[in-house]
Length: 639
Image (cartoon, rainbow, N blue to C red):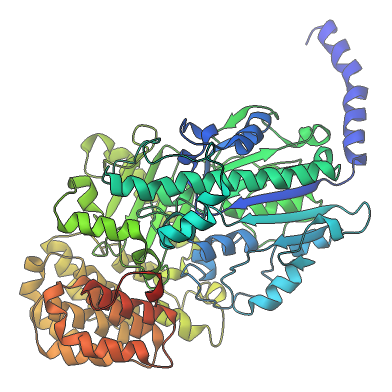
């Protein structure tokens, strides 16, 4: 260092000290969260959609920091929101299955609780949808207020606030599941003619048929987001009028990907990636590591990073169970190179996907690939766009990509989002991308074993153990949860071929029932000609003492081997006293040939009317009946 540089650095020390001192003396920032529903970034103007009309959101991005690699940790409401509020991955807490409401340890609190300890007034307006047992007490502890009237306006004078406002205007109900007439009244009529986006004023994603009927439905997405943008503008105007804009950090994001077929509920980029913007007032610009105006960052973040980030901004100590990272402020930690995401059951739609992404590549492992992307979920089946897609399929109007949504998936997806935003080309079998595929596979295995992913238990098992403990704690005892052995069986599921099937048949005799479960699930994803030589073993598995094994084996015995004895087994399992088993059995009937479903019609009607059946079982029954044209697919038949 020369003398001149040394002299300059010495002179700079007091200035830096003064700056740090001034930052320490600043009041704690107010924090406003603006959350929207069911929206992927590619339908927002600042993310490159020239057809979108989102001036308020676009201005936030112009004056703030726009994230291009922000991801929900789940692909449907309650798992995603539970990861946000707890700061814990759903595959650790056992909260991945939509609205299952299993218990979590008492020390896992809604993170606004920790903000309250730092003097913050915490408000939520209004959605919760937290997927934990005892959610009322959980909500009461986390929020000073949680209602449609909540906001910063009820705090003590000068008290810092953390306020959440959730907007439903872009929710799936607006974009697809309510009737078109309902949409006209509740969305389109709230926009001026100049604000409305017409049926031919946008580009149709390629995995949907580009037809007038589909365009009529898909225009709902753009108009619903436009109405959302208007509502956000009204909120920010109130913030300005209350003279709080210059002391408030604003976060804007969606709870998961687009609420349309193939997006929401699916473990691919279209289901996970979200728009995410942070706006800093001048007095808190030092908390941004990127700058504060028209900044775009490709830094990877997911929803479990939010809790530690806000606790650190509030000046609190980050609890040890939070494994996300603070990405803003003085306690910011080093960016990560990969994120791990998950997608499990949504309502009656059983599934299990684990995903790794570095932002460019998205690798998804489909553990139940015989269940297709556009799977039966009652809340989606009532949507006119889903019905239109099924009609177009039956009339052979769809191309290979569009048909693939209604066909079994491969075991692995690998998409290059940088060059294939709509995920039209699976690179998993492309030799050029084999190094990427193998790296992602290894990273996923490492994460599953390190995190001790408890969702490799069937939901039936999680329900049973939750009577005495929590899934979060159960998974940590290796003796009771031998995940390494379970994962060895599960890692075969979805891969097809004789050698794999032979391994799965051998595992069907394992003493551990969960290993047998994964063995039979793996066989279920095999092609029928591969399965037939093992008919005797599958027929024996129908009598397995572990109900999840008996369900899948019985469905295979009937659907793939045409064994008539399996019919009575399945009828009994559909009416099983355990609702998770009942759901498994009813749902399994939706993935056999429709011509084979006739023997079960009477049973399914009866199960649907049983007083003790929950929403998911009734929804699966209604999907079964709807698939045969025995009930209409409309909002009156949601369950």
